[in-house]
Amino acid sequence: MRLSPALIALFIGCLTAGLSLILQEISLNYLPAALPEVFFLLFQGFVATILARMFRLAIWWQWILFIFPLAIWLALMLDLTPSLFFGGFLLFALMYWSVFLTQVPYYPSSNSACDVVAGLIDHDKRLEIIEIGSGLGGFSIRLAKLHPKSSYLGIEIAPLPFLISLIRSKYQRSAVRFRLGNYEKVDLAHFNLVFAYLSPAAMPKLYEQCKAQMKAGSILVSHEFIVPGVKPSATLKSDRDSKITYTYEMV
Image 1: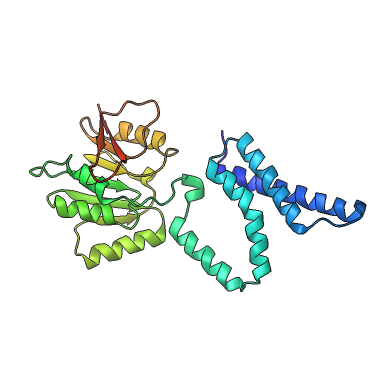
Image 2: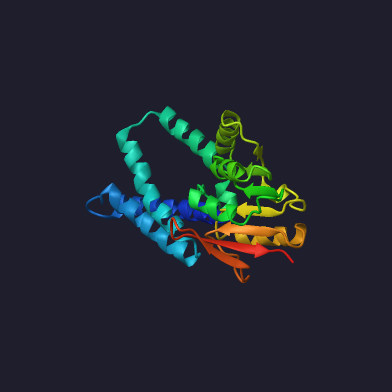
């Protein structure tokens, strides 16, 4: 079974850090003049990038592995207080939580995406709608205003976005319910429409979940990202931007 890209990147980072330290030790003992420290950092980043390409990691992982050693070195040079790093770690942990496992970064849904989905909903019908990865809650809250007859649930795995969406819904007196949790553990059987703005890595598994649980005629709506190997029922585009929304009707 293929390892998570985050675990592969961690392995590459540790391996190249070790190689860099070995090279630095060799240079100190056998070269007449010590090489500058930045040389070893660049060496580590370069080798890590090559390994990331060999393991077919996404382009952003390659950039992260290249820049990370230099970023650590720069942070040490600036002699920043440790509490600043802890605060940053805590903030990012609350914001992005298990991105390293889900491979779904935070993508805020635009008003144009909401307008496209709103066009799929009949004003006279009451639908059960769930937003997968509801983030800060803006999409579901706006959609609920456009179609108040339907019922809405937003599910988010990261604590900080969930808390913000909960506060927003209370402040705006929205009927949208927000839940903290993993959408993979939600039974989608009673939902008529599932909206997702996730990532290419998450779409195949989400589609299989929808196909196994949702009733015939129900719709999976994916903003920007297709389900590989599955022809969408419809391809929709907003007048506001060039982003495409794909719909997949369950049969």
